[in-house]
Amino acid sequence: MMRPPESVIPLLRRLELHGFQAVVAGGFVRDSLLGLPPGDLDVATSALPQEVEHIFGSNAVSISSSRKHGTIIVTGFGPPVEVTTFRRESGYSDHRRPDRVDFVRDIREDCSRRDFTINAMMLDADGRLYDFFGGRADLDKRLIRAVGEPERRFSEDALRMLRALRFAARLGFSIEPDTLSALWKCAPLCRFLAAERVFHELSGILLSPRPQYAVRAGQYGLLDHFLSHRPKTVFSRLDALPAELPVRFAAFCSLLKAEGCITCCESFVRRLRASSELIKLCSCLDRFLSSDPPASRSDIKRLMCLVGIPFARGLAAAWFSIGKGNLLPQIDNILSSGECFSADTLALGGRDLLALGLSGRDVGRAIGLLLAHVSQHPEDNTRERLIALLDTLTSAQEEL
Image (cartoon, rainbow, N blue to C red; front, side, top):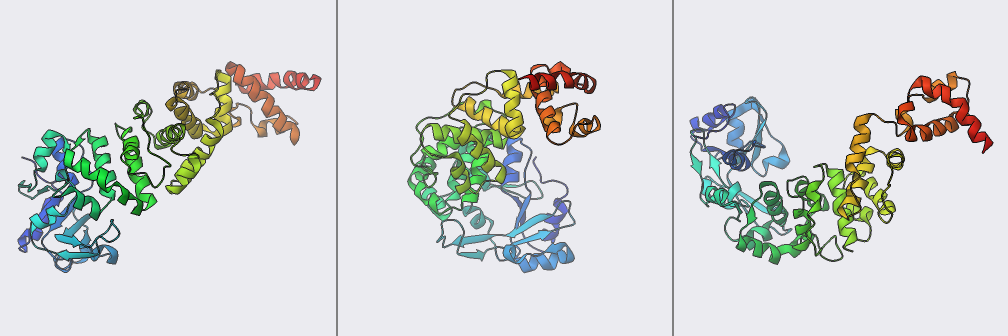
């Protein structure tokens, strides 16, 4: 029989001792039933916020922005746990957050406000499963199904449409037909979403085992606010790339650009309020995507030196995604072999050259000559060999 973690059972029991219902909610129950490592542990209860504070005293941490939605953080039972009062929500005027939250004592009413059946299950300290909307059956059927009326759920919170795709991509589930139909119909509501939230959900999809669902988000109209038109092709190459966000996001951007859905990778990620790292990478993409990837090992190392390792791997993923070969294995091979590709990996550094009597501009020129030689002859990247080669390379350069 499935039970909550031992660390949280005393917390649940204390709430029960005071006459309140207390259960572990949502994602923990879903993942446990699927045999997956459970994520965040949240507790839902019939106790009001002030009652939770009274029961746990100094172990109850109240944050005003969370308390008004019924959440109190309780410590002293392992990692801090969010304890949230059963509630009903109404008046989603921004299609994202409820205008009004009312606390209730009924567990079913709390479950009825949740997004999908697989997230609307609860588990008490004795291992009793509360499943009012068929979540366990939908786990067995591998379905993402909205709780209640799908259009109402998506109209309340438009982010749920992107979450549906993220769960489908992560778990390999299908979206139940009525839920999918409502998603198509409600897709225009995504224009109300904060760009940061869209970026977060897209990132989760791209890092999943099925990153091509990010393209489906575009096809379903969930990204219309960011694209000039919807992509037509489902790109299967994304799942062949390492599950690293810069790599997969770069490939995703390059595919959208290749289909004409965006004109500039950098402006696309800026509108999504992406990280500065991704913005720099996508700026790099716009400069390189029209060219062919380097063909020789030495040219690949020059690229790594020019743009850095993370950007080189992102560019390689982008070229791969549009059918221009796959440099990633060669880049990773260069890194694992310890070959020199930049001044930082050269066995003879600037201080060594200064100690040998070089100064100013001559140091920079010497490093350039040595680096060019080592890119062709990686076996020469030792301090002794580079010192021996220095005069020969410098003399050859002066003769030119």
